[in-house]
Length: 316
Image (cartoon, rainbow, N blue to C red; front, side, top):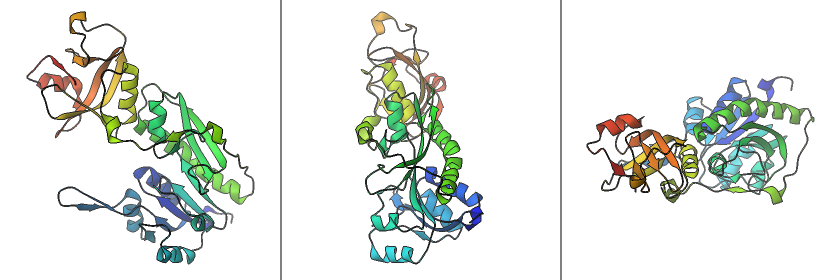
């Protein structure tokens, strides 16, 4: 196999992050033999069916596409047995793959993971990295094994987390770095020019999925912690708060830490907001730059302030 177009791929993935890798493989002329994604979800009053980004795209390209509720389903496994592939690529699929799937390809089943493993194994590595105040992250290409994100590392690349980077911006960097790294890894495996680096379980940390309770701002926390939360949950699920005496939520998407003491001492109550949208935190001050009131679109924070009938208020 001297050409990428000779390499046969099976792909497991679900969100748009996964789709960027699938599209890249497709653009480089890999032969995508099948795609597996999470089943469609239903939402809204009419319970509208929402295909995952990966499923929607692969169906449009007329690629054989599977969305099993259970990866151990015998009919699904029999369908895969009939499709030979050189590699299975797993990118943010959303479930562990079983041993039969792992052992199915001629070469390897490999995973693209959005962290510097063994740090931040699990569902939300980018968000957890920002919340923890990490100064660097990256992308890891690893051999898939039965245990969550614990297989040996084949390739890894790191980059700096800037102080104003959001999750969205980190994901974009991971895609940019990870796409060529994935192809480099596939080539090295085929040429038997790769090494396996065994992960140290002692150095591992777990990136649990984001819970709804985490997304509300607690103004008694330090400004640096609140700012990390706003960055980590941008664009999704979004960090939120409420004005006292108001019921509707306000999502906060962009902020910065303020060093000056701009709120008078007599108004230094937790959550107190001044005319420049600087908020008093448990420790320090934070300036709100971009937000989204419930039922409206995103807007500049000052535009929001100008539209308020009340000029002084407190977040609760």
